[in-house]
Length: 370
Image 1 (cartoon, rainbow, N blue to C red):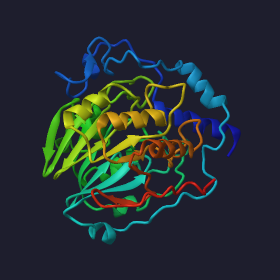
Image 2 (cartoon, one colour):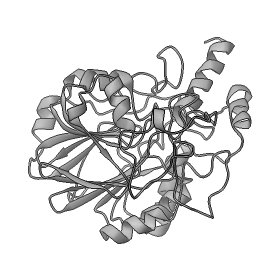
Image 3 (cartoon, rainbow, N blue to C red):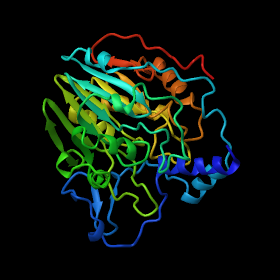
Image 4 (cartoon, one colour):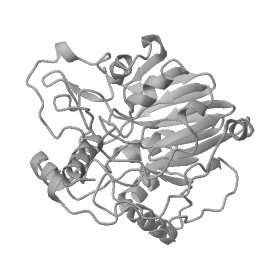
């Protein structure tokens, strides 16, 4: 890869992770208002047509957009891409269909993408099957590993949940393929328009404000707050909402953090739902340059404790090069912290199936890899 191509790849990597770093227009809200402006929950301003995070006086400011972009273009990275192959457990339809239909299963696809089998019905969270988390497929962060099964072999999908519109969570090629193969899409406010532009029928989309609840079949859903931001270009920052999610299937509650910095909302969520059987928590792509939109491992642990979780399942790592820490750093640090605090930890291999309530031995699979 040429020097220029490497730099372009980094620039698209930054766009995938952080979106545009400013560049908001001064237009009034009306021409570009989201499909549903919240009456309560998220803070939406008609003055700048943007969503805003919850008040957090402890939130640390990010560096300027110029400093972040400059670092991605000129900075040096070491150890951010694995030398050895990432282990992948290959999946197929018969093995998925054979999973106990009375239980809840979580299947790691990579990064924050997961396939859920919830009491016999299949769901997806933030599915990204493309080779790159980027606006283009000729540059940007490239996968460290293949997906455990091809997109074309996914079973029929009952519901698809999105946390926000960044490229490493909302992938055009994946959505385009799935648009008529998913019964229902559950997204934060404004993201429905993104899906419609990708060809998803409007009558299959449900948009949620923070704390808004819904149900589809036997699954109950609540969009809960997160501390992050949104945007896919230079002029649309925060025009759509971002969220974490609570998923209840039968007696078990699943929490998915989406992307978030540490904030008081985790404690509020834990109090409202009185704990979780499993919490899928962001653990990766953090940096001192953007301290309030992604959590350091110590903050992921604190957020998990606030949530009153039983099992900490870490996501947002081991698939794309999106920051300056080594690819192993999130896993090394979170496993050491969990052991120190006697927290039940899940660091599943790509393609591994975790069945809620079923005993498992957690393997530190990355320890022997470079």
